[in-house]
Image: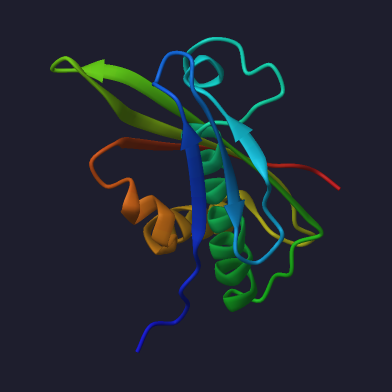
Length: 147
């Protein structure tokens, strides 16, 4: 039995170059958000893209995995700020998501650098969205902030 199943839908009208769509999540938390090819490959202009949505999914998933691993090691984070930069590039003539670069800034009282590095590595292996990106290069830069 699945842990969770979520659904989103995009309605697209027109061709790729001049067309447009809206993406909406069934939960009501996402959308309707406008999407276009131009927003995906040029300037967003207030519209989103599959890559931005993938980056949001990766950043939120990684933050949850890291919070879990830190707690399992006896440390509750005061604050985790996690960003993901997803890159779309051409591979063998086809647009392909080639990487997701995760950046973490963490404030975790009583945690030393070695424990932090171990928790980050464990989170990288645990995060289901990292595994979804298995064919892409996933890199993590993490910094334990004083506080």
